[in-house]
Image (cartoon, rainbow, N blue to C red; front, side, top):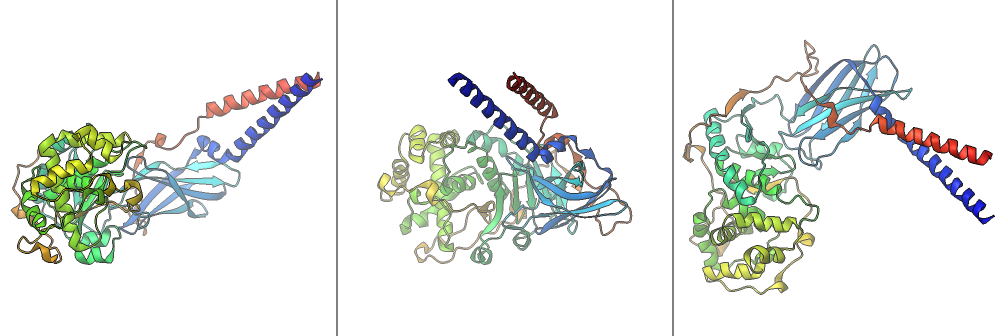
Length: 492
């Protein structure tokens, strides 16, 4: 009797589980049926970009069925980016016309130069799905005379700047990338992209939203977006570009979900050091700071300070300390240190593993070199994760990476003057043989254009999530088999 009841209970549980599974299949019928989606016919896709504001995309296509709903799917190119969708405004008569939009402003800021995969998807009242091809859309407008210099390592996109200056910039910068990537322990670099505006005003107009004080003080001359392998800048300075690209390489070192966040002194100091690749400049700049005694402990330098008078000291001190580490322990020590952080070790543990002492102990060696007082040990440490600020759009660079400070009276803490870099004063290098100047692409707008010609380049369809139909069929067959077995059992 007990066995019979147990068998019935098990059978009932199986039946309930099977019903629940079929219910899940029905609830996800829309996503499953997408695998059997039909292609739209005679589709024409056009777009318009308002730089720093929005990208509007239009589609006109033939669908011989009544449309209930339209979706506009978007995914930015980059590492670990995700798909998202919005609903499409559409009309239908002899054809279907739909409009999709990408908002590139804050808080979901997408910098100029970002490339998106996009496609349209229409669902009929009968549940059938029609999908367009996948297209690539670039956040570059038609209002400026954009030009390009590109090879497999770096693409520079610019306007309003002399072509030869950009070619020299490209050559000077790409020649430094192998040295920097080797020091940081990054073997395989992607093609980085740099969007360069002719001046700071244009960058501020189309760049991310930053504080009023930062805007008025002209703090930032560039922003790095490692998730897109992209940087945007205010002028064609090789030092600024090297600084930004070093940020992008740095961003490829801490990829583990268990990685310990890198403090700002390490990230910014490393990027500033590689602008020149030596310590001579930071030694000169740090002298008046050391004499003033206004030197912070690195355990408290996890973020860039908010006051203008402190920013110059922060960059100079961070740059010199990173230079001290490289000169005394070798450039590859930075890559080893980042590898330890990537494995999940805390700052002190990672410092012990690579440099043989805690952060405070290694810092004291640097301080002793400058004749500064020593710092205490772990009592001054702070929680890196706790004290990091909320995520901000991009890693900002202060002008060309370092702020100039007067060496005559550093104790007064006057507002720091930003160093100006003139492109004509930079050392000229031979033209990179791989670099070619290409004219901007032709953009077709729907306003309406005289001739409707698709602008976008279709992308591979397998870039979008797929559910294999064979898996669904196998699941259904197994379910029918279980139902048949249960039916026979109940009948007997």
